[in-house]
Image (cartoon, rainbow, N blue to C red; front, side):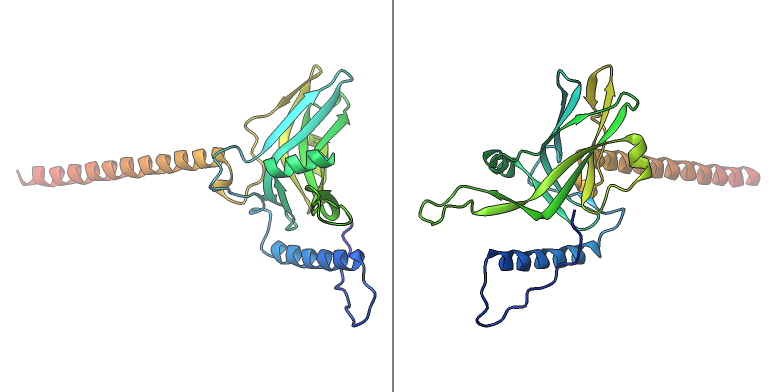
Length: 240
C-alpha cells in the first residue's frame, strides 16, 4: 500500500479545480486522523472493536476448497482497527454494496503441501476508492454515491507469520488447518482484540477467571479462620 505522506491541498482563489483536488484533500485528512489514532494504539490494544448491540460473532469467515485444490476465503464480517490506526468496517450492509459493485471480499489461493497451518490476514487500503451504492436518478452524470477502502485477503503460512510483521494496515483474522485436501477453520482462534468485550470467548474466560479468584479468596479466608480458631483453642488448653 502507498504510504507516502499526504500533503494538504493549497487552495487559491480562481484556481481550476476537479475531483482530484477533493480526493487529495480527503486523503490528507484521513491520513492525519490515522496518524492521531496510531499514537494511542500499540501491540496490546489493536484489533477487533466491541459492539455492544450485536450478540453475534465479531468475525465471520468462510473457507473452502475447490476441485483444483485451491483455497477460497471470504470475509463476511469484521469491525476492527489495525496497529497503524486504519479502520476496518465490514458488515451486512457493506457486503451488499460490494456485491452490487462486483467487489466481494473474496480471494482464491493455490497453496503448497509443505505447510499445514495457515493464517488469514485482512488488509485495508483507504486510499484506494471502491465506489458503492445506488445511483441517484436525478443526478447527472450517474454515479455511485459512496466509496469504501479496498480490502485484500492474504493467506500466510505459520512460518511466514512468525518471521514477518503483517503490517500496520493489516490484521490476522483466522487460522486454517489444511490437510489431506481438506481445509478446516480453527474455531477457537481469537484475533487481536481492543477489549475483552470484543470477543465472546474472552468474555467467557474473564468470567471464569473472576470466579476462580473469588473461590481462592473464599477458601483462603476459611483457612485463615480455621488457623485462628485452632490457635485460640490451643491457648485455652494451656490454662486448664
